[in-house]
Amino acid sequence: MKAALYLVPVLAATVFLLIRAELLGKRWQVYLFKPLSTLLVIAVAATSFLEPTRNLIYTMGALGGLLFSLGGDIALMFKQYRHAFTIGLGLFLVAHVVYAVTFTWLGRFSIWDLLSAAVLLIAVLWFYRLIEPNLGAMKGSVIAYMLIISVMVSRALSTLVSPVFSAGQALLVVFGALLFYGSDMILAANRFWRPWRYHRVSLVFYYSGQLLIALAANYFV
Image (cartoon, rainbow, N blue to C red; front, side, top):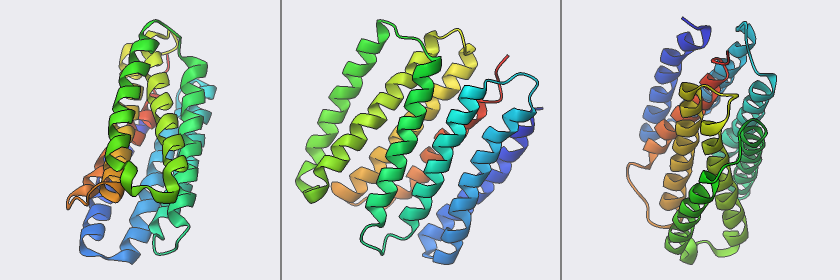
């Protein structure tokens, strides 16, 4: 069994403890388990260096995206500070850019890109109409973020037609990107549309998505 897979149950445990801490309002536990969970995902991507075959571009891209995500996670933990959300948003935006560049570099352009781009654009426009009244001064930042994450998902889909990836590996990338996308939509809806009691389910989407992207680094042949 690949070394990366041994970290998966540990990650599941830390994410469970993180969600529990969030629900119980135990901030010091959040400060512990949130960065620890992201560090475990980083370790999953880093174990690809132990594999006899690897793709250095993908591994470095995954690690880059995860490191910026770690910065975003830490910033968002301190939401009592006014600029923490903006800083976190900016760091996650850079993470998505890194992922998008990596997927573009290794993916392939095809006619399906037009279809995926159209579907994602419709979804973004519909979602933006829901949250626009409550965005205030953050309209520009949120629009940029939504466009970048949509590009990231579209470029993740391009791995399905790339000879660089196996079919299973490409599916890891695609579902990872979609879960990451879903986690951001849940957070945005909770913050800018209407509060949702169970919005912390976004953490399951987020860490599952990041994990799948990181795992893909371990399956190059």
